[in-house]
Length: 121
Image (cartoon, rainbow, N blue to C red):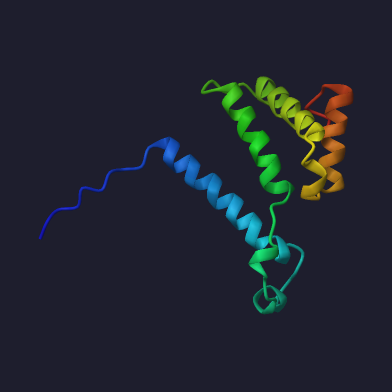
């Protein structure tokens, strides 16, 4: 019997896997998003018609904010980085196709107007 040469995944590999898992769950779970109870288990999902949503789209911009801030966390720097990235998300031509909710749109719009991440929503 040979010993496994499996290596421990790097942080980058784990982060990539987590992000892909989020995106796939979003894509295939989108048709079930607002269903409850038994309907989740009994509703057929046509995978050919599945698409991504604002959850994945906004996560891409959140990831950019995390990368922008780096390893040294400061709440104010991070809050502004997230606010700035979500304003970029508002201007992304793909944004309307991902069906964002009013709360997300309002929060990003509030940050655009005020520049205050603590009260924008």
